[in-house]
Length: 289
Image 1 (cartoon, rainbow, N blue to C red):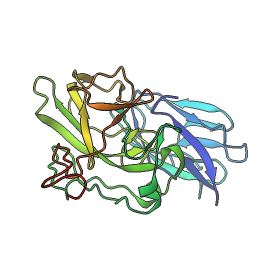
Image 2 (image 1 turned 30 degrees about the vertical axis):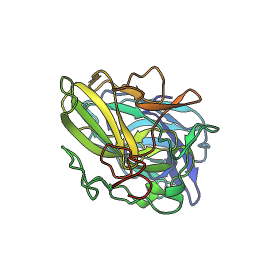
Image 3 (image 1 turned 45 degrees about the vertical axis):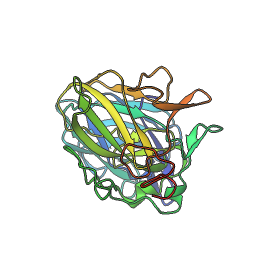
């Protein structure tokens, strides 16, 4: 499936889960096709996308469907707010879909060395399981100055998600000038999941970017790992662009910027002081900062 796709399941108490998030609010872009995996949805819970929150009346955009995969493409006539729900149990099995005009669409994947498990090729979500991930991004409090973003806030249901889509931590996503990669044109906080995908605060969509189409160096930073950046500028537009830092073929800025663990590239653990340096001894070292 593409990164924009959604897997719908039925949770206890007659609720819909999308990518394991209960009653997730989805953000779709006009002109983009999205697939909804309904293989785990039985015929007792026909899935529809409708202009009404309830089943009665309104415009039916997709469905009813179950046990299959459907595709939905919002267009210029689609309202800014529509809904998905069960055609039968629509009072409990429902969610909101926000529809917007095309915006820059970027999918980013990377792994953090600290929680990475080479056996599963996933990261541990121990911080989430222990309730140690804040709902508000922590980087402003660490002294990081955002450009265009900052203050991103997620919710307890997003942090309650388990499995491959579980949140591991917060990261900073930066877009830098194509000619001067030291210049941060735009930055925002995003969630990173066990599978390495960067997600918006709803835990489902790619991070929303408030920036014009163009060419940018893509950088990712974390509070206790060395930052990484693409070696060359990447074209970012409403057409999906994917940057997968976990692939050895993805060229990164600098020399040996990432660590190779059994063929998977990961961000070096360190920089606990978030100053761009790794020190073993002396003032501000990584062992006892």
